[in-house]
Length: 142
Image (tube, rainbow, N blue to C red; front, top):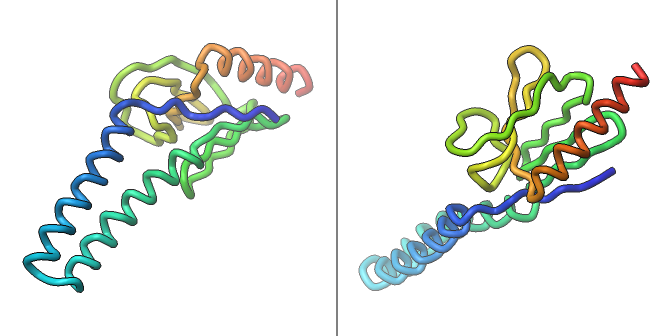
């Protein structure tokens, strides 16, 4: 089993910083105008959002097992057998669909009939090489 971490984009890092700043500004402003109860409610919502985004940083990964790839981000986990993979394509830019990544450039894995998944491993070329080797090895045993 080989584990690959997700690449982290500047947009993701900037989002974390922006939410933290908004949390501090709104909480301090609300405290002086509305009191502690309203501050706790608003601050809790923003802090939970920030905590979720930070948890994505630690949980987004791609594991190459013996016969399948396991892609996870937060509570979303996708397992795709190597035999089901039809095509792997590099992508830079916006992507709409299942996106288990923290960056805007990465790979689209096409599998089964029309399903696709966007991932962004740190070392894309090494990941593609390992994944293609796993696909070839799995297909040899089929």
